[in-house]
Image 1 (spheres, helix red, strand yellow):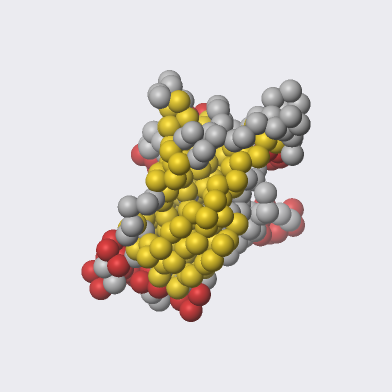
Image 2 (cartoon, rainbow over the protein chains, first blue to last red; image 1 turned 30 degrees about the vertical axis):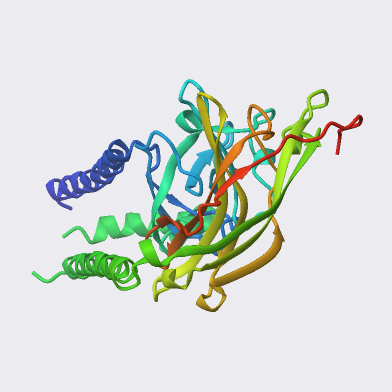
Length: 167
Length: 194
């Protein structure tokens, strides 16, 4: 047992985590989005997007075009929703209001919005607009987050790997 | 020297580098094929768009923009459409989403665009559209006013979802100048609820 070596290992581990965190936050600043990369969780945009697909978002645009695929979060619900802009209305003050719908859903999203809300506001409700797409790569995160045992297994393996494989 | 950890890292690094390179290659080739070979900015055009009739209805349901006391004017359109979207299909096209919209000014200071009809096309064989007397999918209401006596600029947009890469948006070229739709005022009825 070499204390200096163990401490170096621990420091390396910290370095990896802080690096990942900095990368994520840096990307947030560049794209102006809270979460610049999201994983699709539902099938409401099939066949365009399936569960586990990874989407890259951009949020520096002032307005959304009609037909854009946007990601929004309903207040008090932590699940980001990926749907397409069906209608857009700009008012006199230059604020934009959006009505969205999933390609694979029959109706529009009004029932999904917060009670009493009929439109999303571009400046406050939208997390980002989908620009790019990678298929299926995000399935790991779904697999980890939807089953507790999987999560323990995943983090356990990570911890073991970090302890044993650091030189 | 050659620990398992080092090898693992080398392999992962190489895999990620190659993956990024391949993805960029795919995106470049895809764009080249669409914009140069298929020349989609000019070849994708609307051969015929004929609005048979705009249908105005007053609706009170919250699901159609109304509220008990204030019914909303809802608009649907019935139309013919002929357009060939097959140039949008290449080996990296997963689906094309095509949508017919109308842009208008709700008031003199506010602008809007709404979708009347859309369609998902996943196969090149179905990309040559020839529709007759189709009813628009959506019953549309405006956020502020109604549609009576408004002029709508009709547009046919398309959106390509690739198997991998960035989403591509565009607008089909309108061939005839009759793409402005004038909505006549709705004739007054005594019990105007639907």
